[in-house]
Image (cartoon, rainbow, N blue to C red; front, side):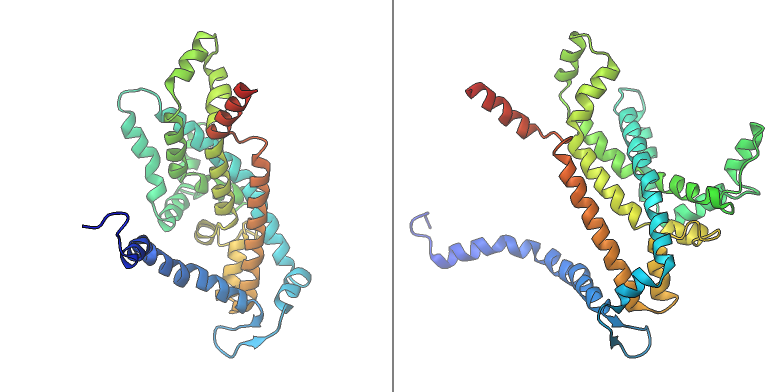
Length: 312
């Protein structure tokens, strides 16, 4: 029987390596399916790389063309940023409201939790088909409901003014995952905090502003970052609902990259487009993290500050 003193070095070495064997499948998958393609796409961005034919090294010409000779690059980028500015706040608001609703001690609330979460597990293709029916100007459900109220519904998918609104609504429909993240964090807040605030005379709104919001700021930070990334990479709904139209009013950056790669057969140029968006997402993420020090509160930091104050 081995003890801590007489354990062989070989046995100790094997024991230290065992945990890495469990994560080895993930590491291999990450290298093969994520890191490998990422590095390869960076190499492709330096080539004139057609789908069929020989690749030709052209250096930074793809990036030069993108910035100087392709007006659609700027148009699609502006449309995508406009979508993100609308989608991210709306997504956070809807998810937080639903999370607050399903935390209420109401009979049958579990059923509503399931109903609110279900859209999150529906595939993007199915979501596009459902919303395509609902937004149809001739037989769509939304325009039918508006007609019952005496309102003439717009041409959701045909009018350039309303097309991007349809994408926002359809995208915000799948907030189930974000709702559950908010719900889990809110349920973790000690009930004693609300009781103490109630004794001090704080109403529900004051408790929400002073207790709930500050406590869940780390979760808000996480959801903002994931929403920004999802908004800037939106493709499926645009491709299937509007195809970038009408009049390219919903020609998102993701569709711009997709068309360059698989419609115009310019894989090198599409890789350069994708890497520029990667840099934009990286910079925005760093900016959000940088700003988080002013509005995100962590329980561990608060405890350290309290201990430091007592010592003084």
